[in-house]
Length: 162
Image (cartoon, rainbow, N blue to C red):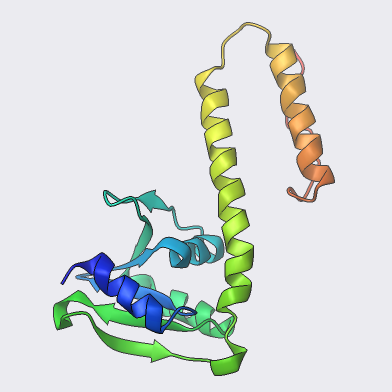
């Protein structure tokens, strides 16, 4: 059976649970679930060949991940490719499940993070010796806006005038 098809089937039944897919010594997480994991643990989200967003981590980190999810009362389940994608673990907090709450936080967070990463890549790609003072001033203005909108914690001047 196709992995993505199985995940879709599982998410229809368990829409408010993170679905972990065990592949050998890794867990893979897809789409909205990957946003929550990236938000909580800083895992990098990648775009798969099938245009799905995904992140993964080694099984050796699973105790840390599962403990954090349980502490935050987020439902999750594990399906294992080796056992024909059967559910091998399920944690269900019933009405106390916080999946939706974390999803509401994670989605805009990841969107902002991705936009900032693209912005940073473009800035780094276009650094040259021309108009450095103007570029630094623009970055300071961006930093001020981020600070005023509570998107960064401190307003440290990290730029140096030449």
